[in-house]
Every structure is written in structure tokens, then in C-alpha cells.
Image 1 (cartoon, helix red, strand yellow):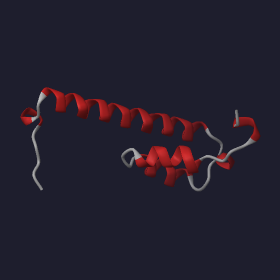
Image 2 (tube, rainbow, N blue to C red):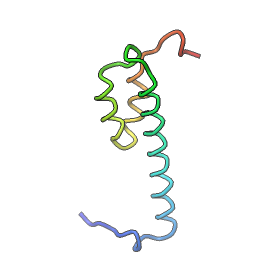
Image 3 (cartoon, rainbow, N blue to C red):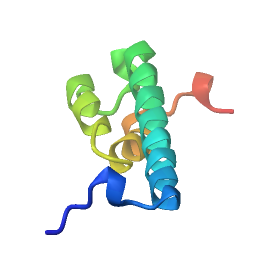
Amino acid sequence: MFKRKWRDMSGEEQRAVLVLASIQLALAATAWADLASRPVHEVNGNKGTWAALIGINFIGPLAYFRWGRVRTRSNMH
């Protein structure tokens, strides 16, 4: 597999990487904050497992927000 170095990327490619990385980190931070503040009975499954899964690219945080939280009457809007 060919690895490109940062300095070999164009300015546009560098900006795209930074934007995507920022989005990924923001999603993960938001998911981890939600998980940490959510009571155990409002999480589908083990909180430790979800904490680890959230670290997987975009898929982990999105999966947590879709399937990891229990929908209760108090958090439905």
C-alpha cells in the first residue's frame, strides 16, 4: 500500500484531511461525553464496549447514537 506523506499532499488534500479528522473527533467526543453522562440503564449493552467502539472512525459514534442509547420518554423530543 502506498503511503503519502503530509508534505506530498496538495493544500486542498491537507484541508480535506483536517476537516474530516475534525468531524471524526467531534463526533467521538460528543458520543463519549453522552456515554459518560448517561445512566447504565439508558445504554444498550456494556458502557465499556461502547466506549471502545466509539473510537472506530465515523462508524463507532454513529452506531452509538443509533443503537447504543435506550429511547426513554424523557429523552424523546
